[in-house]
Structure formats: structure tokens, C-alpha cells
Length: 449
Image 1 (cartoon, helix red, strand yellow):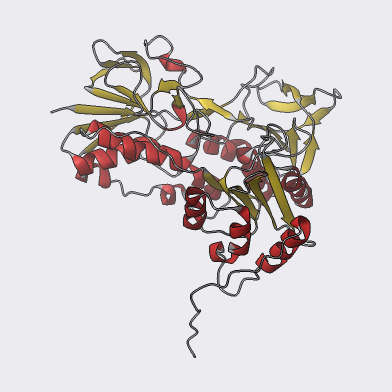
Image 2 (cartoon, rainbow, N blue to C red):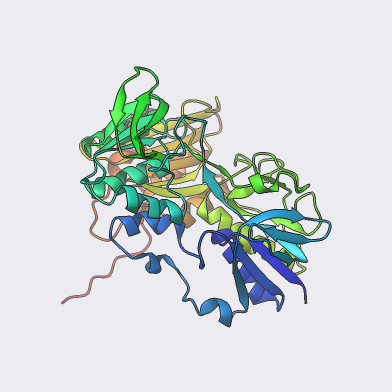
């Protein structure tokens, strides 16, 4: 019986295992050094914030794996011999495979800062990071201040977590506006304001120089590079992005760039060895997408796609139109298609930006300045329907059509205030158009109580 071995029990590896089992009777083993069972990584923050327990982050009961004949092995892979198809573990044991899938995810970036390995320095990616946070920042008695380094989505999640326990937070962001390598100017500035309004000490255009230790090897303070200022703290969160977790593969013969190099079928340069999820790097980017995408849903899609190939239905990975969602504290964010920030924006891309006068609600619509083709939308504080924007992007609708039909895409709950009329009015005034809002073709039905 063919033995499928998957290194990594994140969303990519587990999705692959589930779909291979649906399609075949192959022997399946999932290897992980992190946890016994698969859990939802994005839910870790809610465990710390007290909204759930860790067991609630596990989508499957512990009996699920045995029932579905998916073997679980806890261990750290030290070496891979691809000629003999053998895994060597740090504990000294080995495991034979017929097909190997690398799904080892990401690890937080470290840039050689002095003190970056002290007690109390952590990322916020693995279950072990959550355990470290509970040890070094259980409350504001033990942790008098935390410093977060890096202004991405993980950084703001960590700030929200610490804020929930009333731990003072200083947030060091090297850019001159929060996440402005991704967000257009108006959106980035709105998030700057929102972070500060939550009493978080946001330091823009500020870099970490060093982390200082006390006599016990714990974090004592950090030094700011630009000013030499010393900030006393007990925890340092390193959230300056992530990198593929592939260091253990350097001598395996498997081609490595930043991640494991794969083709459109998720195959590596070694027969019967594949890579999926955050650690996989496309030889050539797919459209405007990045060669490495550390996103939950693309990992799931890779797992589903590769299962077809493993089960003799060779299938190309096609991620479709880009989309993503997140939260900036209590502001919900969605993006569909491409809306580039000022830096790196193609010259053909034009933006329309609307922001509510009083509330933290805004949208930015991107379109081609010559053809008027709709390219993408960012929304903050307004929920939109993925399937509608996916359809409009596929149909290459023009921006006028999208703006006049924006109500069709609204996904906010009933009785929520809507803003599409205000948005359309500003659009008409900005571009000297006279569009009218499309009326939805269905009626709401109210029942009398």
C-alpha cells in the first residue's frame, strides 16, 4: 500500500490528508513537532483573550484521526534522504515514505538583533508562542510593558491580545505609516488613528536596535535605533513578517529559494516530493500573486488540489482572484482583487477612496484609468460578498457598473446602516458621472410577531 507522509499538521497538510482519504485507501501519516492534533492557528489570539479554550480551536475530535485511518506522529524531522525515501527524526528513529509532502508552514522573521533569543521574546504563530505569552505576560502585574516589533497583521493581533489584559504596549513600526506597503494612504492613516485611540503607543518610522537582558536571561528593556532611548519591558513580540520554515531541508537536494520551489502542480525538483502552504514557493508567480502566500485559504486550496494529483488525477493549482480578510482591533477588513499601496502601484491603476466623516469606515476601489476595468476593492467596516466580487472580476466589469451595483455586494446584517448611496454620490462628484444605484432584485420579507 502506497504510504503518503505529510510533514506539518497545519491547514495545508490536514486538508491534503482528508481529501486523499476521501479519494483513496492509501496509508497516510501526518508528522508534527508542534502539537498532537490539528488546531486553528488563527484562533490562538482568542484563547489568550479568554473567548475560548485551546481545545475549542481543534476542529476535529481526537477520535477523528483513527476513525479515518490517518496516523499521527509527533516528532521533529532532522534529515530527509530522498534517494532512499527516508525521514530521520531528532529522536533517532526513521520513517519510510512513497510520496512526501512538505507542509511545514512559516516561522517569525529574526534579523540578528542582539537579545532576540532571550526569555520573553516570541512571535505569535505557534502554540508554543501562546504558552510563552501566558508565562511572561499573564497580566499587567508580571508584565509591566510589552514591545511589539513589526507592523503587520500578526503585530496588531498581538497588540489587541495584550491590550485585552490591560498590559501597556509600545508598537515599533519601521514604516512611516502602518502597513503602508499594503494599504493605500487613506486606509493606513485611518488605522494609525485607530491604534492610538486604543491607547497603544504607536511609534512610526522606528526600528529596534537591541534587546537587553536582566541577570536571569529575561527581557529587561529594548533600545530604539534612531534615538538610543531605552524602554523598560518584560515581553518583546517579533512580528516583522514570517519566512518559510525550510531550514531543515538545506542539505536534502530539494530545491530551496526562500521556500520550497514548486511548479504549478506543486511538485519539487525531486520525484514524489511536493510542497504546499506557506512553505511553498512558485517558480513563477501566478498573475499578480506573490510566489509565496502565507494565507490560510491558499493553504487549504493547495491541499485540495494536490490530493487530486496524489490520487492519479493530475491537477494544476489555480488560486483564482486574490482575496483576504482580517481585523484591525475592532475594524473588519476585506480585500478582493488588487488594490496596491502608493509604493509599487502600477501607473495604470487609479483609486477612488471614500471615508465616513465620523466613523472608522472606508472603501478604496481600484480601476484601470484607461479601460475603466474594475481591478479590486478594500473595505473597512463594511462587509461585502466574496462571490459577487469574484464574479465581477472574472467578468472584467467596468468600475461604473461596480459602483452602481455596490448594494448587491453588501453583506452586513439586516438593519445595519448602509453607506452605498453616500459612496456613489461622492463617486459621481469626483468623476463627473451621473450613476444611479441599482435596486436589488429581491425583497426583504418581514414576519409579523
